[in-house]
Image (spheres, one colour):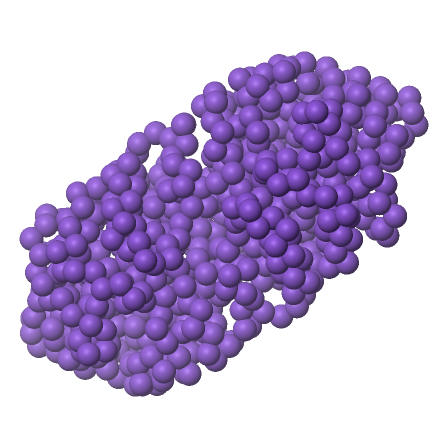
Amino acid sequence: MSSEKTTLPAHVVIREVGLRDGLQSIATILPTAKKLEWIRDAHAVGMREIEVGSFVPARLLPQLADTAELLAYAKTLPDLFASVLVPNLKGAERAIEGGADLLLVPLSASHVHSLANLRKTPDEVVQEVTRIRAARDAAGSKTLIEGGVGTAFGCTLQGRVEPVEVLRLMQALLDAGADRVSLADTVGYADPKMVRDLFEQALRIAGDRFWCGHFHDTRGLAMANVYAALELGVARFDASLAGIGGCPHAPGASGNASTEDLAYMLASMGLTTGIDMQGLLALRAKVAEWLSAETLHGTLWRAGLPKTFAAA
Amino acid sequence: MSSEKTTLPAHVVIREVGLRDGLQSIATILPTAKKLEWIRDAHAVGMREIEVGSFVPARLLPQLADTAELLAYAKTLPDLFASVLVPNLKGAERAIEGGADLLLVPLSASHVHSLANLRKTPDEVVQEVTRIRAARDAAGSKTLIEGGVGTAFGCTLQGRVEPVEVLRLMQALLDAGADRVSLADTVGYADPKMVRDLFEQALRIAGDRFWCGHFHDTRGLAMANVYAALELGVARFDASLAGIGGCPHAPGASGNASTEDLAYMLASMGLTTGIDMQGLLALRAKVAEWLSAETLHGTLWRAGLPKTFAAA
């Protein structure tokens, strides 16, 4: 039994990824006007980082075809840090052109998933990051490059993914010029002990360049996994309103950490996020209505905030 | 950022409370034969602690009227540790008569909830424990007495519950002769930091006499709360198959930690529980069919075990 206390970060950023990871995984195509309203409201309730979409060919993900317009709108909102996902140099060029604050290049540590999802090996993605970095620098752009190592805890297609391979690829991304790196449990295989072990090593490699933890609640452990990462000092997490999300090429990869449950946990713990919980729950209700044909996730919305909950 | 690792317990006991906390909170009255089947199967898949019911007047909780029969059956199963809940001396006498391995006396640290649920103040419950201890000793019985401090993180009726009051009552229970004490988040108000802070103090008071953590997933934090307690060395948790449970006198107190999600988290972390996960999921499916009219909880059952999951 140990009573050593680990230090929790005082301020935590939640990056809303529902507009990308969420909407890419469901059948409903949300009209651009609704997405703009979502971004506007998320900003209004205090969210300051949003992944607005993905620069992929519209024929592959028609539901994200309006990413450029969303990015342009996000850039008009004060203090909003706007990310986009890009699978390759072509997408990165659009992100840079659009003035994204950050572009996220996903890399899958599972070779099988990487080939299924990106049609590239992980090391080919690293090479693409080298090209993206060169393009970013040549453009004199301030867009940050994030290399996100996905299927970091295993893969529904490949099965086991070795931590040593995850860490090798993270180092390779940094060497290739990624400004930030992240770890993602794309398919919901992580547990808090796995998180503690892998994130500790990742933090040792990346230091201040470690950006974000991305967890799925597929097996109910997203909040526990976030807590394990918080204890190591990780202070930025992806989450999706109403827990929508998954991966089209990772069967059974349902349900991101839900933004509202995560924001509640953090606020309850006394860690500031800048998010107004009542406003966030109202936005959740609105988005749930828009997506009434979809299976939604999250738990807090049903019970509501505790009587003892004090706004941060 | 800290990299100190806390020690996790190697073996963790899950006490199944679905037959008591679960069934007392739902409308469906499960026939005795089904309950016996549930106990038999839970034992068969490796569960070794079950709270079989409650010795309360049958007119108050008709769904638990068969507790004596369930207890008698549980006692025939090898190595099964059978608990019952008792609200008072009369119930304790029945538990002792029936040879329960443990009787749990619930105490609510919220005075308002205590009066609503037990019609006694918390200190009157402490006095009752004194009488129960005397009766147990007079009977020469081996039945352990557990004092469970509920609404330990707040109350839907009263609101805030002071940690200092929770700890005072825990000490009082020990002084009154409780062999074991526990903490329960009856209404799902706890977060991992609250758990870390309160459990640390409780462990300092109770030492080896600290028995169990009881969490509700009302706001999605049960697994995170369990993990926070595990890090302090707590090695026994209540949980309910399919997450059924609540409290009739605590509005909105829905959903115990689900046994299957908890067993999965522990096994994934490499902590042994003795539970066969496939068997447990099969039992979950059976109970879900019996309770098809009820709202069930838990997440794992939908996605199933990871491809990488190895039986403990």
